[in-house]
Image 1 (tube, rainbow, N blue to C red):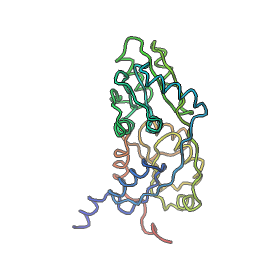
Image 2 (tube, one colour; image 1 turned 60 degrees about the horizontal axis):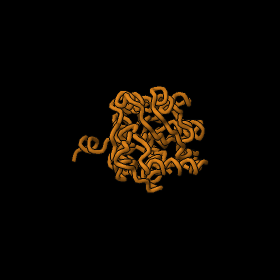
Image 3 (cartoon, helix red, strand yellow; image 1 turned 45 degrees about the vertical axis):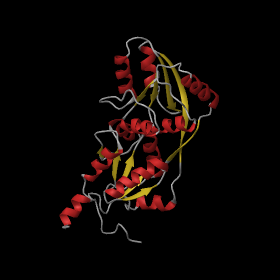
Image 4 (cartoon, helix red, strand yellow; image 1 turned 90 degrees about the vertical axis):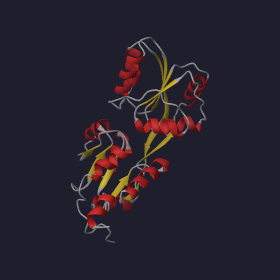
Length: 265
């Protein structure tokens, strides 16, 4: 194999990329990065904690399993983890809407069927618009969300005449990074940081006050890029689709900013 062929086969050879979440998601992203030649640095910046109102969640999930809802909306893969952890059996009559391809894939991976994914705008607003267009008559909808999620979806559906139960499924909490990770970011030894949500963006801004200009900040989609810029991050790359594969592909089109001292002690 020639040098040019090797570069084509491994477009991220020599890159060190920070993966901001751990668990199965982080493992999957790390594997994808390795397949492209990168060295993934898994450094969870956020984690997820139980809701502070477990009784309301339990009651909503009981209504869901009893078939009281026409639609369930799912706006993150973490919500899928909550459904799976509670061993929720979604009735066939209840349709499931996923905010994007990543969330849809997470639902399907644990056996849930997905009836709707926004065709263009992978956001709460895009989901609301498509669901409203699909359902002109009032329907009963359960929206499961993060504690910090903006009520865009719920408010849009209610304004359109639907009956909505909006329930907090989990809380997002920050996780401090190690001194080594902080030093590697500040010294430019991390070539790219994946920004996969507004919560991750906020933690990047808070935990890494001195990010070198050479470090690429890559957002998983336009909505996340907008959230990151509001948090004060200079986003370098925006994936055209809200999927990890699209994000990694977008990074792979850039040239490694510097490589001479990547693995210096």
